[in-house]
Length: 213
Image (cartoon, rainbow, N blue to C red; front, side, top):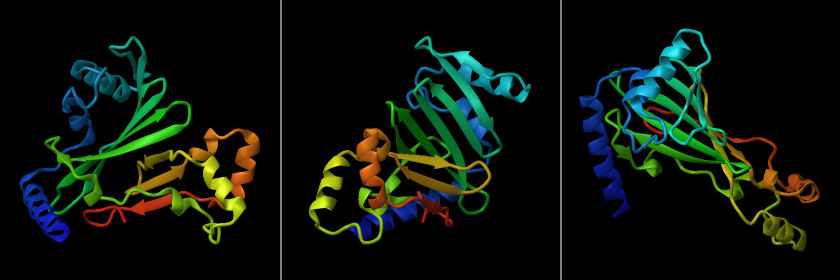
């Protein structure tokens, strides 16, 4: 059944890819549906782009009476300080025949960063994220040899009882990075105990034709 679902998705994905045309991230940002990026109306998104392209500070008040700031904009990448405690990243990722898929990462700082990764067609139809990347797990961040059942390790895992991860994109490459932020949630003493059991590098993915690997 799983293989059949993958086959159906691949066929639909390929059909959509050949029917879409490449544009730039500015157009997708200003024209995206209001229910995907609430608090920031289309006219305000256009104003942010105009301010950024003019070289001025691209900051406007959103509908929640907070501030939204467009921090970076290229042909295929966008970084928006959406609210005081959240950011939005968008990246156009290449497929075939000059077509693209949109990757959008929403990160909330409450206060520790935690992210959601979404994928869309260029018509803003949602795509199944699990077909385009495999989410990192807490176990991946354990240092080599730290996955045993010792009493000490059991205590460390008990401290890391919630899973928080910050995903981020890069403007100049098709790289997705996953940073384990749960340790930042701990107090200083607990964090110092946990860090020796954890990898000191984030998980990195590279976009390979139609999927992050």
